[in-house]
Amino acid sequence: MDFIRCGNRIDFEVYYFHRRRMLAIFAVAECLEYQGRFIEDIINGVWLVCEETNWVLPAHNFNQELPDVTKQEIDLFAVETGALLSWIYYLLESALDAESKLIRQRIKFEVTKRIINPYIVRDDYHWMGFNLKSGGTLSNWTTWINSNSLTAFLLVESDQERRLTGIEKIFRSVDVFLGGYHTDGGCDEGPGYWGRAGGSLFDLLEQLYRATDKQFSVYNQSLISSIGSYIYKVNIDSDYFVNFADASAKTIIDAPVVYLYGKRIGDKRLASLGAEAYQKQGTLGLIRPEILSLFRVLLGLFYSAELLEYSLAFTYLQDVWLDQTQVMVAREQPDSAQGFYLAAKGGHNNESHNHNDVGSFILFYNGQAVFIDVGVETYTAKTFSKDRYDIWTMQSAYHNLPTIGEFQQQVGRMYCASDVYYRAKPNYVHFALDLRKTYPKQAQILAWERGYVFYRTENPHIVIFDDFELITPEKITLTFMLASKASLSKPGYCIAYQ
Figure 1 (cartoon, rainbow, N blue to C red):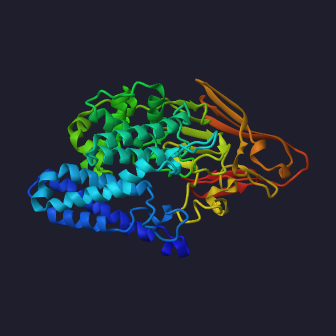
Figure 2 (cartoon, helix red, strand yellow):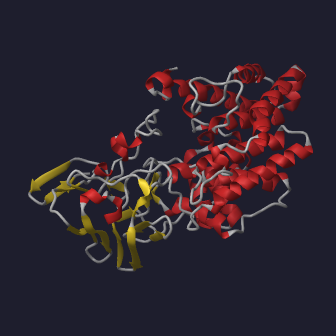
């Protein structure tokens, strides 16, 4: 009721995720030791979860005040729960049946009722994409939910016809997702969500690759490769990533997923990124995430020796241009975090997890943030409501952008960049775009070119320019979000201190 009354998501979710995390850790511990020491806790955890009225988060219980037991919804964490129980059902068959056959029977009953049956029967879940309007796109929900649904069908559903019906439907849904994905592989939700967009796509493909003894594979498709390579294309340094949209500036990647994705598509740079992350995190990194996906933990355990022995060093790209996502990145030195690192974006203001930020940029120096994208606050009911853009972090006035009079950028697909230009040479990079269409007509903008020129010369520097024409002169406010304190030493000069 706290979510309904106050919009608070966290208080409920802390307990919800903690229960599942404990159950996953006990299950892994029992698999490793296999002496029955954790069976009591596993049984208690399984029974507690199965007794829950609903596995859907309150924040995802759309258009309902409380869970309606007569209508089964499927959200991200209902299927995460279903997948967790499915792995326990599969991995601990002998141990659980030795205690009581009713335990696995209960798991099968609940997973079938809450995941498998509604998945087969219903076509109207928005994340399936079957009722997607022309020009619409899907989000990480599609791959995240489908990858975990596949786990349930593979491990729990024993009827071959029903299993194949479910798998066929899963891949029809994923086809819709891929059909609307940028061919440059760019994730407009940001790198923090790539782990559940591109990363969950890998979870899904890898499960079927293994279930068919490697007979099913689409790893040679160019789009699959582009989606995988995105995550290192926006890597700034170590755990820092280009964090446009709702993404966080720091992202701890799921190392086994990244490594194996790179291995499957033959991308050594992607594999190196995953291996280096795993070597830094250690095996305990597998149980680091709040949301433990047991499939990913298993991958990390089974490939642990290979990951630890992998010696090919990760190398940075100096220049990246994602022509459809309209994101550019450039670093001063090839294969080094030293010096300047610039990232800027075009696109439009109806992207997934959108902020009104067309034309904004971030700047790092020697791996440290200077100009930043502040990201997003803790999610509440307001974050994904009609009042989303009342939140300051979503507004263009709190990105590195101009405000014309009282007018900021507006939300919607029509508020987009135009006349986008990009060119990269060894000694300079030039990125420019017209922002006129991102503001309302009342701002009376005839033209507004925002441009970035990154000079990689003996004296490396970056010039940011605004070339504009207004019908009526207005007060113009240029916003710059800084990571550290700044000194306005004299008019026209601002010095930011590390």
